[in-house]
Image 1 (cartoon, rainbow, N blue to C red):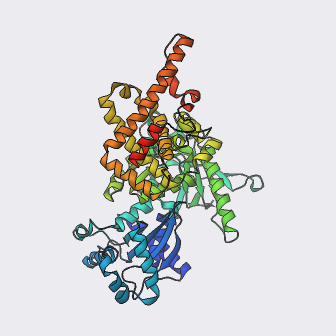
Image 2 (image 1 turned 90 degrees about the horizontal axis):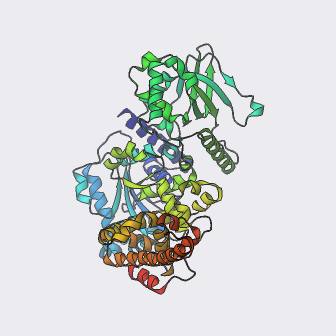
Image 3 (image 1 turned 180 degrees about the vertical axis):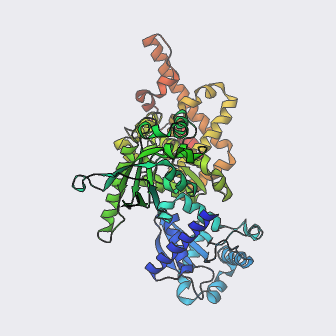
Length: 575
């Protein structure tokens, strides 16, 4: 509970800072602060809170590059920690929702409840709501009232209570909570620092007591220390068990047995008389496996002599001059440090991009869909209980979503379904640059489409043996052909219309989609049969599914300039 209180206090602090920056009181600033950390680049934030606001306290827009979405908030603020939302809040949510839902009463609502200068704006918001381009939200930093919330569960209002806000802060602490508590390293007798004329940022190396990190981690319930690390703890692997054993049984051997830890910070100060170093806003970018392996070791006090090499890199906070350039440069330095300090064996290429801007943007977007995007391996396993408690479901994981995006670019020479089968290639240079051009909404649609396709293929596999045999090898080719056929039928990727269609199909699993998917599978099967016949004549042996679907030559011929009419027609039936 202490950590929850710490997050709550930080929320109050940040809300007051945002209020001071914009000349707003905390109740008004709460919505602005949350909008800026939760949504993708909110625009045109308008604070309507006050007499005659008629339950609408704030509204703003976001865009996915194709369409504009309007977000309308009713907010309630408190400075009292763990205060339960009173029943009156839920009555207000009812009035807020009915104002938009009850078309017959809108004229009376505008004339009698809304102050004059807001009426035209509200009238437009009603139009956007009717068109499906406006969403309603209730935001409070009060605790959820489990009794009262039942009365509003069927309303078209997305509700955020204290529990939801704190969970989001814990997951996206870089946006919500910029500082971690100082880290104290004791018993430091020697510090090796690089000459500042020969390094871009101040860098020091020390041999620190592991028990200082263990003590710090005991109070770090949300693993904020590791927020910038590209991986979470991978569990009791053979390597991690060996690390724990060295820490417990051979502590004096630890210093020369371990690769060390890399920490980013804003400042580190040495107190030579006390043999201490204080590290301000520490973030571990390399060493998660080491520290998590020793954290829960039995009797850590007995291992007080265990030391580890720590590289401390100082990344100063942003100044006031040329802020955009500072932000860009700071991110690039941090990215390079994370990449280069994690380039040893047993790290996957997709781990190295888990904290870049594109992945963070995707993560935030999926969160608005109440889905958790797993940027770092095992992250869902570590957080699922807390996430499920605020009704966040499991979404895609980074590697799989990147493969789907690659297949989506079926006409790109360096991507497409063949490249998608080899995920390590997708995180190299130009290929990954192409991947990052994908809008978050399109990425979400591809995730939903993958779910739709998976269910239909599973059902068809029960009915047809040839589908069951080939399903695994053809999955990315099949996915790309679905994308290509939908495009031929004029589907608009990134559009709200397509999102709603795919979400509906994920729930319904209609026979039309099953017929559509089967037609594409049969189209691939027929093409494979032709290539297999020719291959047998040339080589005297059959063409395997593995070799067929990893060949750009074979797969490329499945994507003619104009798709067969029967596939275009089948695609139109599902649209």
